[in-house]
Length: 243
Image 1 (cartoon, rainbow, N blue to C red):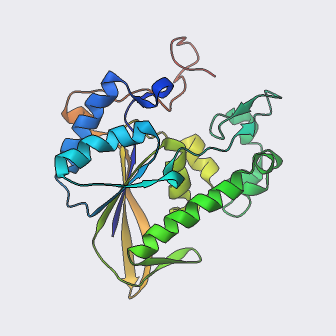
Image 2 (cartoon, rainbow, N blue to C red; image 1 turned 90 degrees about the horizontal axis):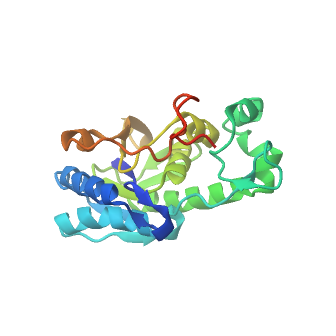
């Protein structure tokens, strides 16, 4: 089975939709995805994800299952350098979070007091349990850190969601801390992450990622990737987001 995890196109956060550029990105994405035999679509109920998916669904004559659990990861933390102010878990200064060894462990990242206060792990479990229910309905049942291929298949599933949520799904599939993905990766708007099952013995499968955050459809259409999800590449560029 193949999974496509797709971030929404360039967002208009104020109206929970897409910018003019975002609609162009979604159009180029639709051209790309329409060439694939995607069997099932799942979409976040937030507007920017639904709008992104809408052009692909229209082009393919398909419908999608709306999923609240695919909405952007909602739980917030109080950043240590900003007492009293809340923030998303991936907006955290590197000199602060990298000092906590627990964040680098598959089974320890959730033990940090800041994440516990934000009930981050509880929401993580809630999301990954819903994700596993979907995978089980398509023949792959979670068993510890791998999957039982109860009904092996080559179906393609597409999930339209958000950067922070995508990192949660990937950390679950690859058995790594989401903190590493939240802080060390960037999935540009409309990007596509692809994973395949690997079944080296009958009935035992894992998911292997063969591309992350791919925006080749944008380059094919002479459309540069949007800056959303990134911070300043170097400190001396004031127009790029610093904090």
